[in-house]
Each structure stands twice: as structure tokens, then as C-alpha cells.
Length: 239
Image (cartoon, rainbow, N blue to C red; front, side, top):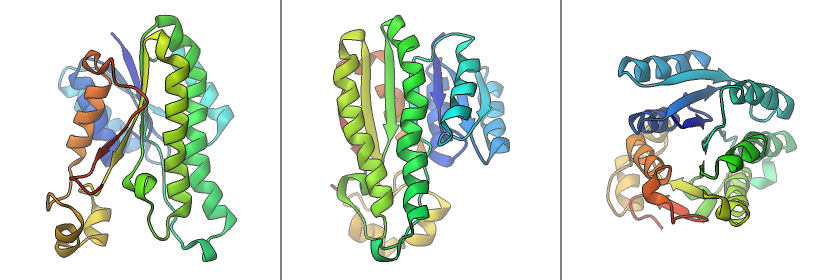
């Protein structure tokens, strides 16, 4: 049974990804940092369906803590599907943004990609099969006012993934990015009115976490073996 690690697996999109991968027969490590109870709930839901999952908790921005936890995970075998979903935002216009706001977002979203992916690469390469998928955002594609830090981190995933895809392509490993648009959540309910949705999204609706999970599950499957180095926009036609 192939194993998958989903960072930020305790959130709305992360949990949908975990469930979609479990439905495809993977053993899923559901990661959390500040919300371990949420990760346990996701694990319990997956296990209640007769599928396989377990919770792990560490701060992806902490290189040493991440490495220690990954070493323990690797004791049971290589991770062959990595979903880099952990991230955060701390919005402000650039003129009023503090270094701490800039650094916190970069550390978690972009440095977290390295801290998680790099230690898992050689064990994955030895199996000659793998999938590395990072979750970006429409902000990383098109930019957004007040989110220079978030856009920098997310678009950094695009360049890193395209470069990494060339390094591991001959080993049966694909590397891709999924860039969601406006997805149903309490946050988007607060920030986007029905009028906003109607004006911004050609499909006239928000996406669902399950729709992101389905795209990720496809990219993690054998069926997507010839797709690599791509940024897949899932945004209802916004760009």
C-alpha cells in the first residue's frame, strides 16, 4: 500500500484531499500543527470507512522538528505521495507590511515545501515512483492586493515544482501544482458576497473542497503519469 503525507491535512481543503486519497486506497498521514484534534477527526472519519490513516503533528517551518517527525514516519517505509498543502496568510499592503508578516508566510508556505519534500525525496526515488503535489492559489498566479507575501510564497512553489519536476522525471516521479480559486469556506463567505462571486467567477459559483481533492487524487494516480511540471488552475474560469 502506497503512503501519502498531506501537510495541512486538518483544514477544509486538506481534509478533502486526505479523504480523496484514502478513497483511492492510500494510507494517509494527516498532518496538523495547531489543530491536532481536527487531524484526529479526519483520521477517524477515514478509518470509519474502512480506510487507512493516522495523524502527525509538527511545524513545517521548523526544519529540525520536521526532520525528526519524518524520520519516524519513514521507519514504516517511504512516502510516495507528498501533498504540500500547509500554508497561511497574514495580509497587509506592502507599504505597511512588517518583516514578521513577510517572513512568517514565506517560512510556512515556501520553506515548509523544502523542509517536508527534501528529506522524503531519496526514499521516494529509490522506489522509482512518486507524486509531489503542492497547493498554491489564484493569488500565486495572478497576484492580489495586500498579499505580496502570500503571492511570493505561492508563486515560489510554481518555480520550485517546475525545476524539481525536471530533476526527478526519469525516476517515475511527477511534480505538479494545483492552484485553487475561490473555494467554499467560512473565510470566503466573509470576504466574497454573491455579487462578488457573480462578477469574478465565470461559472458564477465558488468551488468546493471536494473538487480540489478530486483533482489532487487524479494527479496522484497512475492515470496522471505523463503530467508533470504543470500548474493546474481550478478556479471556475477566473484565469
